Length: 463
Image (cartoon, rainbow, N blue to C red; front, side, top):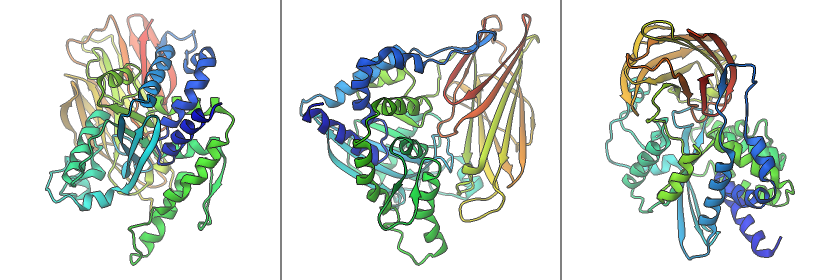
């Protein structure tokens, strides 16, 4: 490896430290991909058991590799262009529709494949500079008594491009002047996953050891617990540890010889929507859209559709203890097909403390436009709206500590629904982790079942 390539790799690793996660992997990934295209492609494809009639439709990994290479070439070209990125750092221990609570953000500048500027700030500091009064979405006012919408709560849509536009809007209201070439959302789970590659780390001046099983949780304790327990402490620099971690992870990653692990890491994080991309450049944006790394809600899907979106309205990090399971039962034998959605919420927390409580959330279920709600159980009074060419059912849900709540929603699909060419798209919410998911269909061809883990967007069809 020549010195120029080494310098480029080191720059990419620095971006990773401010939780950009993916960009450093592009450089690692490019060299690895060129020599291992077939093996990467094989790993990317998850083909379900052939004995099932209801099959996940596999992604086109060759297209993903081409898009990866296209981004590498654009962002590392030595043409004097400066790329400015807004990085949204989301803590999915407090789940929000766009991934997690937007606690920090970063501004990264790249030029000729090198990092030339980095800036990291607490979102609360940005919000202190906003004087404009913006009415918040209903659940914030109803459940949290928030009267003014600001940057930290801007990711209230499951659609990443919408959240990017809203984040830029609040950034400008705060007096921000940067013109961004792109935006990247990174969930806290990426931090844990990075440490699977580096191994445990310790930060001088702090007693905690951070590893892949506890990193996000321990970091939360460092930056939150002491300040909540002692309100007299100065909160301006409470997240200084994040900057102190930078050289430690840089050194560890830069000595990692397992390049394939880093390339696979970036690929998996994007599939799981722990990393989402948005570009102002139309060619790059079209490229990431083509492989579904853009975090968009599929507004043009013309068959059956489902996306369950949770928003933690309890202002604490209770999602660390939440477990979810989903099942979807579809009856195509009736004149108007009906669907039964079951969501099991289990709050495994045994007691409340500074970061944990009963779970209070606003659930939105996105279904085909024109669907009609028939029944609901263990969910509050419904609010029906339309968004992204979908009908949306909204409910308040409460899950006490140590208890389990089984939400049941029954609805009728629209009259123009095509039963003969059935396809189902299930989109995963960013930050929701791995969710066991069962599909049961009843049609004139018989009854079919499929059990999967919903860890990325999945398409199903009846064969």
